[in-house]
Amino acid sequence: MSEKLHPVMFAGTGSDVGKSIVAAAFCRIFLQDGYHPAPFKAQNMALNSYATPEGLEIGRAQAVQAEAAGIPCHTDMNPLLLKPQSDHTSQVILNGKPIGNKNAYDYWRRGTSDIDFRSEVCKAFDRLNVRFNPIVMEGAGSISEINLRDTDLVNLPMARHAKADVILVGDIDRGGVFASVYGSIALQTPEDKKLIKGIIINKFRGDMRLFDEGRKMLEDICGIPVLGVIPYYKDIHIEEEDSVALAQKSFIMQQGKINVAVIMLQHLSNYTDFDSLEQDPRIHLFYTNNVDDISKADIIILPGTKSTLHDLYELRRNGCAQAIIKAHRNGASVLGICGGYQMMGVEVCDPDHVEGDIERLPGLGLLPITTTMSGEKVTRQVTCEYGSGYEIHMGETRPFGDAKPSPLLHLSDGREDGYLVDSKCMGTYLHGILDNAPFVDFLLQPFADKIAKANKPFDYQAFKEEQYDKLAAHVRKHLDMDKLYQILKDN
Image: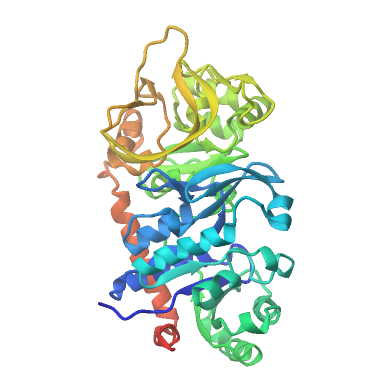
């Protein structure tokens, strides 16, 4: 049995500096080195969530990190998840279950009288720490938001509880790395400064030798060792936590490939549903809400959303709804997933105002179904004839009027899911269905003649395992692993 290591927290100088990816890398590195690691993020704010084997909800980033660690995901890995519903409110998921909506000011400034969130996240960590070694913790945003120090559940206060060694991650690609690293450390209390044991400079571009002097200068002014400088990479594909990069995906149609358009909804969620398609050599995938792009796509996917009625209203307002219907009439396939599936129906009803003030909207009319929103969220992992997936949705969908059921999927528990009109028009509640090669082959079959050469079905699971190994090798190569292990073993 491997010796016990201290928990390690990868904290950041800001958002999007690469904490999630670095944590995933170390989940795989520790696994490769004979340990039994598990990820942990006390509180996550993201629309991209995942269903655990027990049918509970956590942030997708921790599910990815658990996969890198070679273990099933669990709510203890992300006990508190905030899913933004507007600029000011979020749905609060505690230990995998929604407990209501909170105003941001009330949540951050005043706390709550009925639930001790700090106690809940600490208990989740303690349960995890008994079972795994080491715990690979991820901070949130910047560690130097001193105005939120008293209510911070994720960064240094959590590291204090865990007795974790903190490694500060700075992003050199965005500029100002000296100020951001030094300032992040300088703004800590003396007690918290002692927890920061190392610095990682991430996303370096160019000749590494140019930063040799900078590395020494940073160590001198901070009094903390720089454990490594990780170069920027483009050839390693790990599922992203945030949707920031979606708008940068190429819109350009490609010859000899099946062009797949994912509709860019305002409240788009679970966009990792499409990572497998992005890596499939037969497919060119892009995100758009441009009616001209929609008209040129072979396959149009309506993705999940945190606000079905609002996004359906917006699709009608911006012309995308009409463009999708016209493209389907001209031969394009349309697939709806979760909220996108609901939008494809005849109507979406919300008589109890679960989502807001809109009580009913006509859908796209591509599927003969009707959906009624409900306050109870369905969250579970499932298997079907094509493989596995997971449900995270609110609302009940059934055939409209006298339409006959025509399920797309038959689930192993005896239930039926989705609706199939034909091979070019279908919808499902299952996230992750596109990770299953047989279903992707079924979706692509009507356009097989567009593929220049016959390619064997794409094995996304094997691809992901290869990417975790590539990421681990990349990080190992550029970090002082001996020094890191020394930090994690010292008393």
